[in-house]
Length: 297
Ligand code: ZN
Image (cartoon, rainbow, N blue to C red; front, side, top):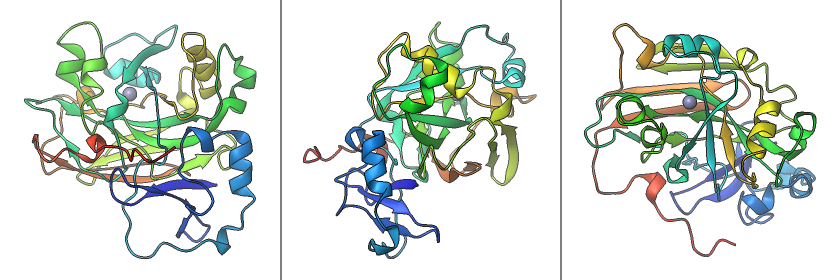
C-alpha cells in the first residue's frame, strides 16, 4: 500500500496511490496519515478497503509529506563505507546518530531554499524508515514489527554549518526545507527486502549518486534496534539511514547547490522527488514552516 497526503501545505488530506498511479481520497476512511493511523491494526483496516471504490483525486495535486506528526527525525551518518571515504572520515564501528529538526520536513516536490548566507548546501538521497509502533529496546530480529513503511528522503545538508561551525552536525541538517520526504509511504508489505533498493540522485540532469541499500554498514533492522536503546521511538518518527557516495562535498573540487538548480532523486519502489532550489528569503515561509491544522486529532 502506498499512502500519500495531498493538497495545500498545512491542509493536506490522506490518500493512497492505486495500482494505476491515481491518487484516491482516503479522507472518508481516515482523518489523516499520522501516528494514530500507522499501527499494524490501523494499516490493516485501510488495506481492507477496496481502493477502486474510493474517489479519484482529479487534476494535478501537490504531494505533502506522506506522514504527519513526526516527533523525531533521526538520521544516521556515514552509513555507506564509500560515502565515509569520500567524506574523509572512518567507517563507523557504531552508528553515527544526529537529529534533523522535524520542522524541516516538507513535500517531495516543494522548493528547497538555501539557508541565509549558505555557500555549501548539498544533497543526499536516503532510505527513510517510518515507525509504526512504540519501540523501546527492541531486538533487531523483531524490528520490522515496529516499522510502518519506507519513503524516499533527501537529507539536505549545509556542510559549513555541519562541519566547520562546531562539533555537532545538527545545525547543518535541520534548516527550513532540508527534509523533503515522499512522495509516498510504502508499507512494509510493498518492500519485503529494504536492503536491496536502488537509489539515485541527479542535479540539473547529471547523475551524482548511484547506490543500493545493500551496501549499508548497518541495516534497517539493526538501526531501529540501536536507536530504540537510546530513545523511545514513537509512531510517525522517521529514521533516515544514510547516503551512498556522490555528494557534492566528495567532488574534487566540491560542487554545491545554487539557486535555480533542479534536484531529482528516487529509490526503487518509493517514487521520485523533484526540487527546484531557491535563494533564501524570509517571507513567505516555505511549505515546511506552514502551520499544521489545529483541528487534526
Ligand atoms: Zn544523511
